[in-house]
Image (tube, rainbow, N blue to C red; front, side, top):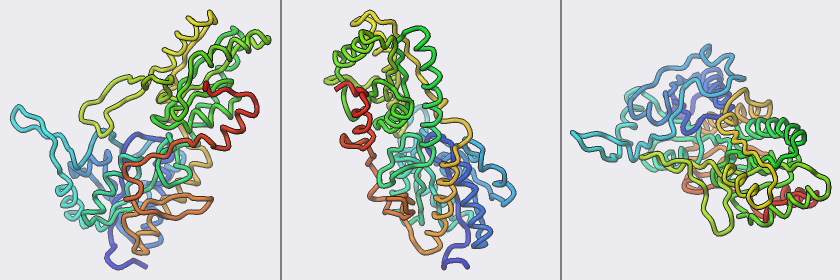
Length: 365
């Protein structure tokens, strides 16, 4: 049975890609069609497709057999902001608010509601659309697990699994060559991937953005291991980690992106510093975008399916401007206004930090 005013919905994937996006698209589309008899539109390439009016009707068959496929069949874009869209007039380029055009595009196709799948940046824009009267529901995705208000985002478990498997493989070569191996993982300004993958792989040192490290502490620790006969060390470092009193390492800046800072390269710097300070042979490995790709884990498939189904259910119950969340093991929702502009970071008293410290792991502090 359709809720009053909802006959057609659209779904889009914004920001960076991650495993599980297709599982959400599938759940949204099949739930909307099979349970509520709705028409479903797929917006191509995130907010850019909404701006450029690139969207098409999704059929039941089109979303079949995509549960296990990584990435997104709709495409995505992490540099487009409808409220600050770059337009060229003559020889000048300026930022323009084209959100009104986006709303017209939705209405032009008879679309009554929008489901935005994305991270903190996508949710910030979704919250602004909600204030403009658009019926919006957000679905939290990111490998970084930094979306505020939910215990976990889909994509995170797969990224941790990928990172852990890579660290396990690096472990054997580190042992063979008696090296200090520094593995850099993603996460931006939050250390969730580094913490989980570091603990899961039994890494010796874990460095997080939330806990600025001291180089002398790390050097003393790996040297101590060497003196005790432990002839290699595994250091997992989040891309946003920094030395106490120092700054995060920026790989590049992408002009006009909603978040222009691209972190990366801290592992290479740390490897050089440890080598100079201790004389130990060091190697840096930057896992990079491999963490974003591949088949989603069973956990992420289940979470993504639950999120997608719940998003449609919320719309049909008359709920608007909310984000689907998993809190204390239960699916619920919170207002997008509470999420916009905030990220979830690792607390210093997190149970995994306590457990890691208890088994002898160093956090460089």
